[in-house]
Length: 238
Length: 238
DNA sequence: GACTGTCAAATGATCGATTATTTTTCGATG
DNA sequence: CATCGAAAAATAATCGATCATTTGACAGTC
Image (cartoon, rainbow over all chains, first blue to last red):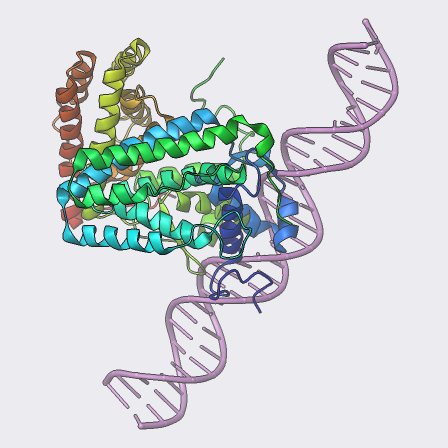
């Protein structure tokens, strides 16, 4: 009988290492475990009620993803976040996603446009915050959000570009969560719609510009929190 | 003393898992172990004379790097190579590295130019093939080659872009080795020099164009081998 | 002869004990 | 009082045994 967690219905198929990996990844992405903090292997074993091997394997995978950093014989720590890194990341995303979006529009596949429209529609229909009152995020919205951004660049014709774009998206996710935890509230005008509309209207430069602004504005929001140390009340989940 | 390389000097510091990782990675990059082949864990334990844990950890890291693919409960296999993937990869590299080179030139830092000049100089002074007669590759040249390409994009002002460029470089390395193993011989005119010269001369479009051609020409070479199955006499190292 | 279900062998995954390394403690010394 | 060094504690890394899953062989059925 597969364990306590059973995060999803299809438990039993996954490997323990995969379960730990998924969960830990989530905790890091949502900044439930603070950036820079040390990851004690035994504590993790206890938390997930598994042995050393799965934890170690999960950490190894995460370290290749740059979410945790590993130093030989000195264990694992959650990769740090910094304003400099955020700026860097934002610039890279503007450059790469901008290019991918441009290529997508120039390719102009009908299927791409349809998928983009669809993913926007779904995003707009998904509530931004959890159905219940409190929680800091709605996983369903996150999913829809990721899908929308994926759809934007999905017409570029290169799996590698899409993969890279996805990596950068995930890296940015940590900062977004940080902003939310810090209480930064976004002006709730929907920035995604105009991007989608410009893309479908083939206004290449305009769409790319809107996308860049979108990234930059988000980054600005995060910076407010990064600069205000009091807001980062990170909590380790029990 | 900042010791850039010291590939083996600092032995004893490394962890077994890291040693296995490095070695296995090398074997995969050089196509010493064929693409698509299964990686039997116990065989690897024997080959490296270590226990299960280090091997497993090494494989986990490699799987996050897309060099091996892992399926839960079904073990690890070397990631496949294909012409389609090569085309995709080449396109992504032209796009990303081209952009990074453009940004580097436009930033126009003196330090970047000097580093580029220097890395080209070193590359040109490094023998392409092993000092002894036979071996299929010279690790020193590879190192210099990687440094040159890294230097090209190093002025773009984004660590993330550099990292991504590096990832793509490594992915392409497998194909380059495949070409060499297949006996594809490159016309030995130095394609790197004109790229460097154009970059230093601030001929932006020209330099970017030369870089793209460089990638595409290399890809064409690889394709010859990919299409000729007889040439892929891959050998498992003892 | 092809299909299907069962069992055995092979292989992957996990655990807990053991070993190696780093970090901390604490006392002696200048 | 700061510094150094040795011993002790903490923690990471590794191993080999054990458990779980998949794969392959084989017999029985239609």
